[in-house]
Image (cartoon, rainbow, N blue to C red; front, top):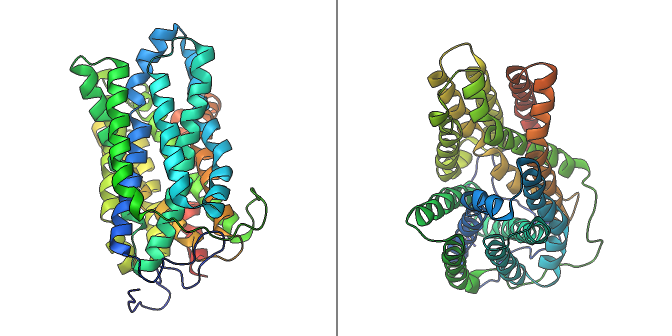
Length: 401
C-alpha cells in the first residue's frame, strides 16, 4: 500500500475501513490495475445508460404511445434502479463486487436489447425495469469497488472515476446517435452497445473485487447519522442535475426567448464542465480537501443558477449552466469517499442508501421544479435550488469530523 503525508484535516482517503466490503485489497493486489478496471466499469455504466437516450423516440413510435405514457415508461428506469440498489449492496458483500457487476451489466445489456425491439407498452415496461435494475446495481457495486481501490491507493481517485462515468455518457449518447444517423436500426445499434459492454467487462473483470465482505445484518437499512447527512447532500446534488437535464432547454426557450435549435446547449455546457471538473478533480481534492471542494462546489453551482436567471441574454445563461456543472462536478465523488470514512453504517448498506437518495433526487427534480414553477415561476424554482446548494456548501464543514 502506498502512503502519503497529508496536511491535518485534509485526508482524502479513510483511515478506517467500513464493514460489508473488504477493508482493503489483498497484499499482492495491483491497485493501479484495479484502478484502471474501476474506471472502465464507471465508463461502461455511463455508456450503457446514456445509449438508451437516442433510442427513446424509436421506442415511442414503435409502441405508438403518447407523451404521458412515455413519461410513465421512463419512470421505470428510476424505479428499477432504486429497487435493485439494496439487493446489489447485499450481493456485493455476500458474493463479491465482480459477480454483481457481471450480472448487472448482463441485465443492463439484455434490457437495452429488449427496449430496442419490443413494440408495446406492456412489454416495454418490464424491460425498462430490468434495464434500470442493471444500471442501479452497477452504480452501487462500482462505487463500493471505488471506495476500496481509493483506500488502497492512498490518493484521491473518486472524482476521476465519476468523471469516467460522465465521459461514458457523452460517448454512449453520441455514439448511438451516430450509428442511427448512419442508417443502422435500433436493434443493430443496441447490439453494438452490448458488444462494447461485453468487451469492456471482459477486460475489467480480472481486476474487479472477487473478495466478499461481512454479510451480517439486514439487506436494507434506513440511513442514519452521518450517512443521512451524506445522503441529503447527494439528494440536492442529484436534484440539481435532474433539474438541469429536464428544464434547462425549457428555460432558455420560454424565459430567455432562445431558438429551439440552440436550447440543448444549456445541458451540453453543463455536461462538458461537469465532466472536465471531475476528470481534473482529484488534484483539487488533494490540494484543498474534500470538504473544501464541497463548499466550493455548492457555492459555485448556486452562483451559476443565479447567473442563469439574471434578466440578461440566453448566451449569459449558458455561462451560468457552465458554472453549475463545474460546481456540481466533485460534490458527489467527495461524498462517496466520505462513506468510506464513516462508521455509523456498514458500507454495503451505506452506499445503496445514499445512492438511492441520489436517484430519488433525479426522479423528484423534474416534478418538483414543475410544481414550484406553477406556483411561482421557473426562475423562482431555480432560485430555491440555489439556496439549497448554499446549504450544501455550509454543511461541508461537517465532513471534516
